Image 1 (cartoon, rainbow, N blue to C red):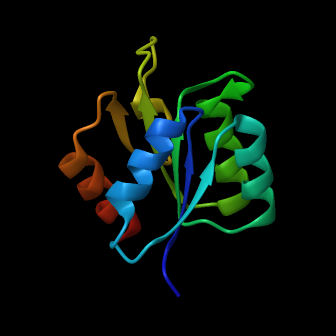
Image 2 (cartoon, one colour):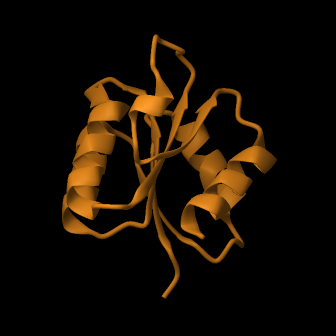
Image 3 (spheres, one colour):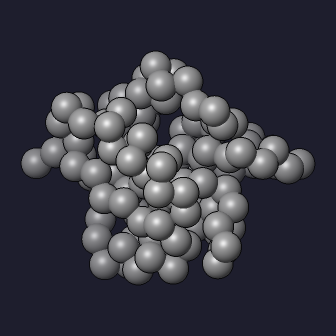
Length: 117
């Protein structure tokens, strides 16, 4: 069974970009376009990796990471943001990687591979 990835971002262009970057990797990718949709998917499915934006109109990516961690235990997360607030990625233990937009596709795919190894 392929590794399961949930990608959460409120920007439909970025969701499409993630899908294209992850196409052909052998991973199963689910997409969520809001905090609420991502929370519902986390609660109803098991994922090996969460890739999430930081800022949603209806929530915050760090809260989504907390929900994911409570459900999945030792699962890993990748946080991506266009807004760089005073966030210390080292204080989020399940964070496998942290990226600021625009994404470097090669670095992102390497982080996904490493997180799912």
